[in-house]
Length: 98
Image (cartoon, rainbow, N blue to C red; front, side, top):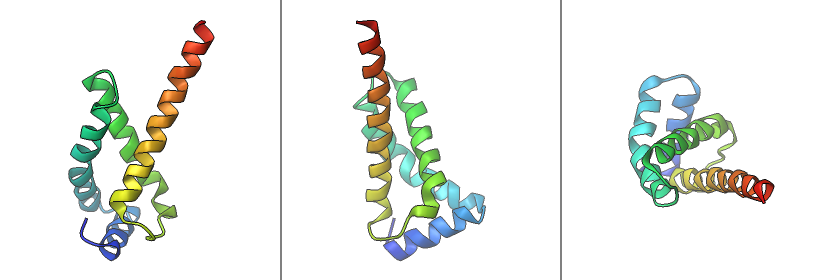
């Protein structure tokens, strides 16, 4: 993404339901997030599902984006939160099995 002003404009377009803006976000971030996630999970399908979940979570949280950090950094904060949550679910299941 070019700038914080450009980021806010893109988010505004997505929140207004502009499908081209969403496509732009998806094309920009899917491969970046997928690459990051795929190094942290077991298989490709899990990485794809988590990446889609992360993009969905980001879109659902766009009304809280205030532009104090770049969209890139904000997207990766959400990525970290989703991965931490996923890990806590796995850790809970392991603890229950013991």
